[in-house]
Length: 226
Image (cartoon, rainbow, N blue to C red):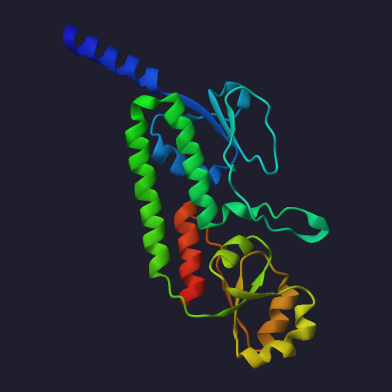
């Protein structure tokens, strides 16, 4: 009995040594971060964290052990009034840069597990590349609403036309493409949906949620293969 108690406390002590309290400002990255470093425990406040990961393109956290996970992300897209399109996370290319950045910091603070981190990152990137290679490369023209997936569409060179409030007035100009299917990535006013349905268009709402990486994969497959 005494031996069991000793082993229990040793295991508990060992867990506490390697537990790492982390603040991460994007919930979509938490699953992959825990996959890279299972010792992670997420906290809700910066002041409670041992490590802080933040989006340095739109934010700046001045704190010791605070790291920008967007380092190396280039070719940003811009909206009206030159505002940055903040949806750069919806890109396989940027996703790979982000998880590599996070893993590099873990290797500094937990060098004992460097080989394990490297292995997990390699497996994740191989999985992404394999799935991307399987996607149908046939050219398509996509009608889409909103800017959320502009990085993903650009990365795969998917030709697209924005469906905005003016589209219903200029729709005839696009009938030459023979497109009858519109992918809606964001909410669209019902009055325009009804009007376009009367023109014979079918709508597919792609934004389903789910785990971030597989969510992107589902979107890509549905748009490219749909």
